[in-house]
Image (tube, rainbow, N blue to C red; front, side, top):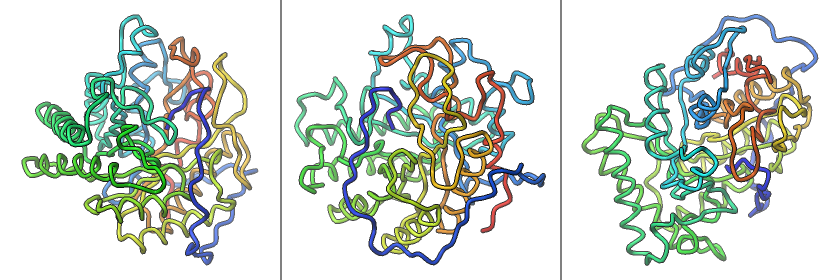
Amino acid sequence: MKKSFGLLRCIAFMLLVASCKKNVSATPSNIDTLPATTSKVFYDWGKFVMGADLSFSNQVQDYGGIYKDSGVSKDPFVIFRNHGTNTVRVRLWNNPQWMASYNNGRVYSDLNDVTKTIQRAKVAGMAVCLDLHYSDTWADPNNQNIPAAWVGLSLATLQDSVYQYTLYVLNNLKAKNLTPEMIQIGNETNQGMLWPIGKVVNNDFTAFSKLLQSAIKAVRDFSSTSSIKPLIILHVAQIQNADWYANGVIQAGVTDFDILGISHYADYTTLTSMSQVSSYISSLKTKYNKKVMLAEASYPWTLQNADSYANIGNAAFAGYTISPLGQYQYMKDLAQQVILGGGSGIMYWAPDWISTSMKDKWGTGSSWDNNTFFDFGGNTLQGIDYMTFKYTF
C-alpha cells in the first residue's frame, strides 16, 4: 500500500461476498478498561504469522530516529521480537533512484537496503516475507508503474524479465544465507501489475496471469535448489475485493500459489462489524482451498500529528476508540477473528514509521506516525502487545 498524502482511495471492485457466513460472533473488547495482566505467548510463524512490515527502520534510524522500550533505546528489530513479532515483511523496489534527491544521494527499498533489513530480521530470530512491488516506486491498486528499465517491452519479453529478476533476487539473498520464508508476488495487485501491459481491464486477467506465472515459476525453480522454499503470496487490497480477485486469477490459470494475502484498513473497508472478518476468511478458504492472511493491517492510536506531514489512516472502526488502548483492543480482536476464520496470520503495516527529518515526494517526517506502535517520543505503545495475547485457536 502506498502511504503518502497524495494517496488515491482504493476502488471497490465488487459487492460483498454473498456467501459470507454470519454465525461467528465478535463483540468489541471493553475499550474503557486496561487489559488484564496475562502471560505472554510467543507464536511460531508456521502456526500463525505475527508480522510487522519494518521497511522504514533503516531509513528512520539513518535520520536519527530512536526507538525505545520502557524508556530504553533499543534496536527496533529486537523490540519487535521481544513483543511477539515472528515475521518481518519488507518491500523491494526495482531501482528507486527517485529517492536519491530526497536523501542526499541515498536510496532505500532497493536490494541493498532490503538485504540489510532481512539480515537484521534473521539475526533477531524472525522469519521474512519479501514483498516484490515490480516497480521503481509504490505499487497499489491505483499505481502499478512499470520499472523504467522495462518500459516498452512486449508481454513475452516482460515475462522473461519478471522471471529473471525474481530468480536473481532470490539467488542473491540465498548466497548471503538470507532466503525469505515467504515471497509476495506484487503489491495490492487488484488491477494487475506492470501497467499498461499487465493491467486488468474489463475483468481480463490474461496478461496479468502470464506475468504472475512467470514470477511463480521463478520461485518454484529457485526452491528446487534451496533448503528454504518460500511460500508464495498473491496480494489484493481490501477484503470485499478478495473473492473477485481470487476468482479472476484462478480462472485465468494461476493456481500454483500458497497464500491469498489481503490488505484490511478501516479507511477503505466496506465491512461494518468485526465478525465479518472471520466470515470472509472462512468463505475464501473453503472456496479456493488456499491459506488466507491479512498481509497488511493497522489502526490509529491518535488523531494528533507529530510533524507537518499530513497523516493518512485516520478512520475509526465501529466500537473502537482512536487511542492507545483502542489500537490494542482493535488489533487483538482482529487477530482473533483471523484465527476464528482459519486464517494463517496478520502483518501490521509500517509500525516503525515514526517521525524524523526524512523526506519523500509528499512531505517531511511521517504520514503514518499516528498508526505506529510508538508514541511521539519513540516509546512503545501497548498496541504492540497484541501479538503476545493468548488467543483461542
